[in-house]
Amino acid sequence: MTVDGKFSVELPEYMQPWLGRTSEASLMYKNEELDVYTIVIDESKKELKNYKLNYSLEEYFRKTGLESRLKSIEGAIFGTPVTGQLNAGKFIRTDISGNVNKFPMQYKLAVIETDKRFYQVLSWTHADHGQDFNTDFDHMLASFSE
Image (cartoon, rainbow, N blue to C red; front, side, top):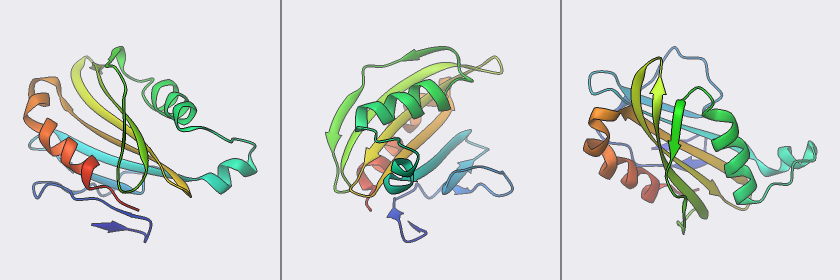
């Protein structure tokens, strides 16, 4: 699936568009029956620089992923960040577990840096199902391209 001419990502067949939810995400997919969700948020480096925000990949990962987007996770436990390279660019990925509204959840967060943009790829499910979707979450990240 290609989004706004910016990036493409392969999503599992069981996921459908997440309609009717207001968000800054450029991609939102879910399967409520399976309790699995994925969003992608992208930000232009040029726009960030206009605000004097000249982040490295590590800084962007920390500021937007760990400090900002995931504040709503109670008792968040962060896995060891893993760095790597995709066709799209460099990435940092981590696993996160914790409670949201008293429900135990499991997340995979990846931040990808390309020449022009930063992307946040966040997938999550109920903690009881986390292992069931790890392969799909990893495949989505591996398929990501700009």
